[in-house]
Length: 274
Image 1: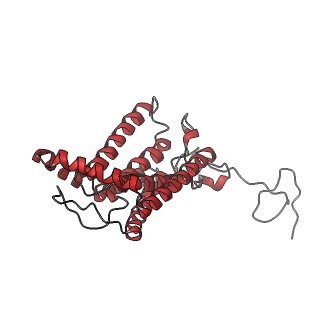
Image 2: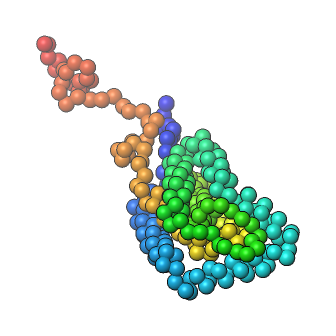
Image 3: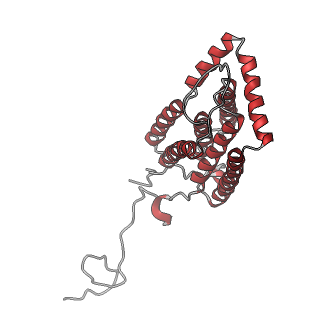
């Protein structure tokens, strides 16, 4: 058989980028700090939203009013935002995540696939639970451009868009560590596309007047905390840390007790009749 490379967890690359592996010790520490910082930031924002002080109230309503002023006299812009709202909904990101996870699993990148699905599932459930917990009403406008039912904080579109973007950028680079010439250009392009998609999704929600800016910011913080939290979980290595590669053939065993039945006796050792 030789030295096989049948990896059940294909993200343990040893390429130049393996140090950025979120499952490594240093990567896990950084991810834990990001998760803690995002959680604290969300808690501060949530308390502020709950208390509803004057500055945040004026900022939220001022941004929504500006969005309505820009969109209402432009039917083409309203149609564009409506289309974007459908394309960037939570269902879109979840379907993309399932499809990508299936591809990763098929290619042997099971750790990346599981972490991607875990982040999307935990973040999606948490976002819906927080909506019910805070029960914040959506913007009340005299002549709204769009109308959506349900609670406002945090924005589900913002949560799921950044969940997918952050999970892809976090969990796929280790899986791409062995790509010829290095994956740096692909990562830059993917990062730029992800940033644009997330920002457009957030602006769409405010432009339609169905979310406050603080709803969008809260959704982003939830997504960051969840993805970083999943990344901070140590990844189990193949072989349970034994250092033996899966698929390698073991040589014949030797026994330290000569003549024991079922073992190979050492050369020159006398056989003992039983």
